[in-house]
Length: 93
Image (cartoon, rainbow, N blue to C red; front, side):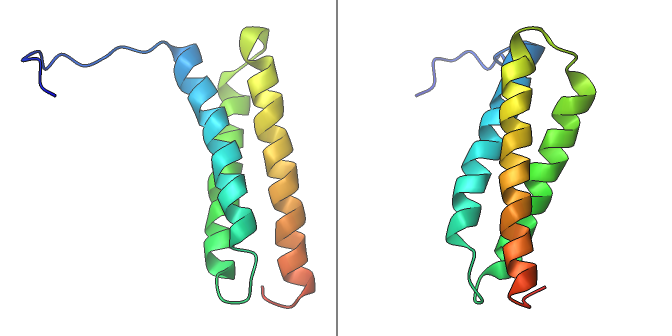
């Protein structure tokens, strides 16, 4: 639907950083589906995306309202690390 106004929507830093945290949760959820011999490369790419997003959040957030979101992203990274270890133990990487 086009209302004729092409002006971009402005979001604050907290909204964007919060969305990045939510992104890590969704990527981790998808990563769990890819923990198989046939799709392990996708799981590795998902792990890399979560790690990059988590690092970005840790570098750009010192606390405040986003502390819970950063903690959530770090938990998602920890869980993704565990899945990556599973792949390694199965000899897939």
